[in-house]
Amino acid sequence: SQELEQSPQSLIVQEGKNLTINCTSSKTLYGLYWYKQKYGEGLIFLMMLQKGGEEKSHEKITAKLDEKKQQSSLHITASQPSHAGIYLCGADFNTDKLIFGTGTRLQVFP
Amino acid sequence: DAGVIQSPRHEVTEMGQEVTLRCKPISGHDYLFWYRQTMMRGLELLIYFNNNVPIDDSGMPEDRFSAKMPNASFSTLKIQPSEPRDSAVYFCASRRAGVGIQYFGAGTRLSVL
Image 1 (tube, rainbow over the protein chains, first blue to last red):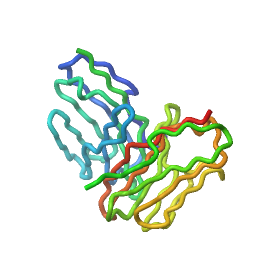
Image 2 (image 1 turned 180 degrees about the vertical axis):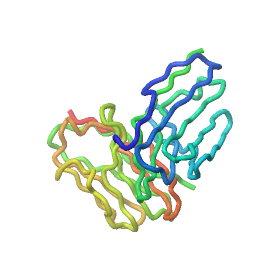
Image 3 (image 1 turned 45 degrees about the horizontal axis):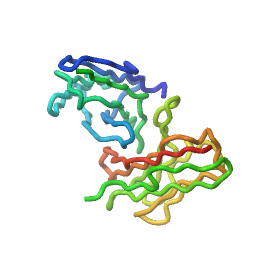
Image 4 (image 1 turned 45 degrees about the vertical axis):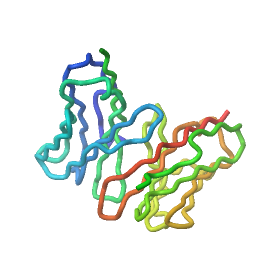
């Protein structure tokens, strides 16, 4: 969707390196949802952000929503092979549904 | 609690055949969503239901696609007749009213030959 841009499309990093994935909206976000997908599986919910400036962390993954509520980032610290997969952001524009970004394919090599 | 259950996990069929995908949402969830995922177009919303009523089917590609939700615990997505371009992974997701988090099933990988 042009309402939501996700970057980069793919990322290959060495184990132990940090990385950031971005999700940018053309409109104000009422909520931003991060999911992870492994090949052949469904999407697994990671984190939800709703307030401007909000930041949440789970293990080595941190997600932030900017003050203007139009951009979110997902940061992984000291990446591991278990972090590999496709990361998708889903935007709530104050409707019943989510609009998803195109996804970022992450590969982590030893 | 059981998550969203989809069946079959894999479906291989020939062009022109009818395909039916099934979904059992999480008990107590009011919303059910059907998505299609392809490399070219990513994750697209096809249709969603609220309390078993179709609310928005603007993502359904054409009349060959139809979806029903006869009760709160079951939904189907039907393609008739199927075409090779329908090959994709189809996901079902559900959520509770007032809570934005959607929970996804494992998906059905459809191959139309």
